[in-house]
Image (cartoon, rainbow, N blue to C red; front, side):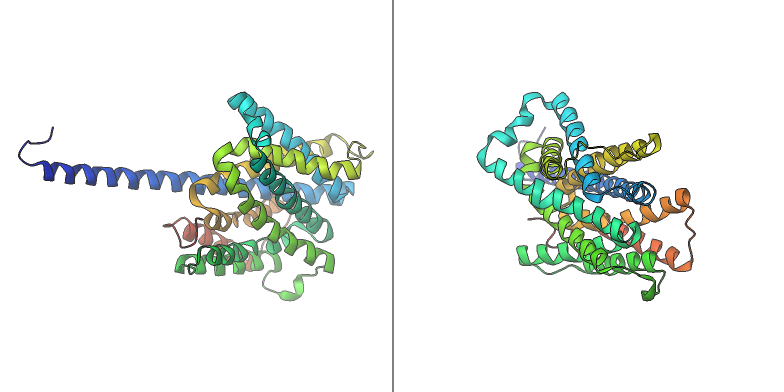
Length: 326
């Protein structure tokens, strides 16, 4: 209870207590955002390795796999969202303004990104596709700096340098000649980087209001249905066996449904720039898993690349950077 004769001192203590509470909440939000974004990136790494295996061993069409993973992921996420929120999941498609944002997010964002990345893997390999997609770090920082009319912080600049350098070393072993990539692989890889930026930014106006699970679920289902209708996705490849079905299930559950929803949840807490930087864990995860399951061996340059990528994550987990929030 405040002393009657010293109300000013009491108010000062209350303000200090409130500020301390706010700082603790900010730290908790950053921890949540960092964890969600990192988990999403690791899920993508798992998905990339499984996708490459399917392309190599089963000769699957990248468009067919994109449509299947999006449709099944959308159904899975919407079922989970309905169990938690009930009929509220339909709110985003009933509101005209939100419906327009959702369509843009589904087609220009998720479908564009998903198809481009799998096409890049099919035209090259998961490592090369990942390094090209990681250029979204630079793209995102520049877009947000221009949008917010702010400069790029020292932490962001350092993280961007480490992100590009690390993914380059992991994919090329430090030798530019090792990137034997076709024009199609290069074009689709850069397109995937643009796709990450578009779906990240297009998600923000509706995810915060309508919820991450519902928005991501509808986006996946709509984008997959649009592509699947044109490719007749209901026609199953004849050579898919039990192992192939398991790989597809892992891509759907871990790499798509969980990966995208966790990453978008991270954006809510730490903003798109920092979440995108943490997304650079994806190439590290993909390379490590390819070593464990596909027998890939690492050299010195790859290990240096791992260190650079981890440095990116630690830098981005610091304080909030300029231009990180709209």
